[in-house]
Image 1 (cartoon, rainbow, N blue to C red):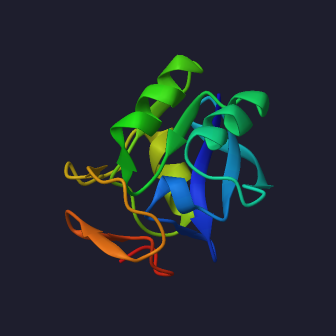
Image 2: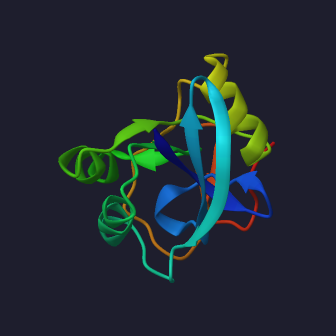
Image 3: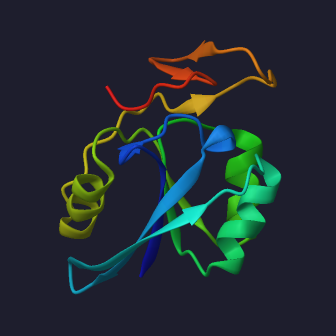
Length: 131
């Protein structure tokens, strides 16, 4: 299985549509077997679903994400696990082991761009990620 985690400075980035890149992990038999980076290339929102589909990603793990992005990813055959935080390697290992803990309030219900704002308990559009 190939998973991508929104990433900045090795932490789960908290807004899918503004992520600078992804940590991509191959998981086999409940263990992480490889890791690489995938740049978002400055694209956002809908284009990211295409980028991940072209990279043959099976599942995305992120902090916050909106309904439109979830639909775009679903249409590309990519599952979504939202509400994650922390070190991307630790998150990938926890996912592989079946022990990943996530927040339930990870949906962003907005259409703002540029300015930082609050979506649930995380900050979207700011330069912070993780907790």
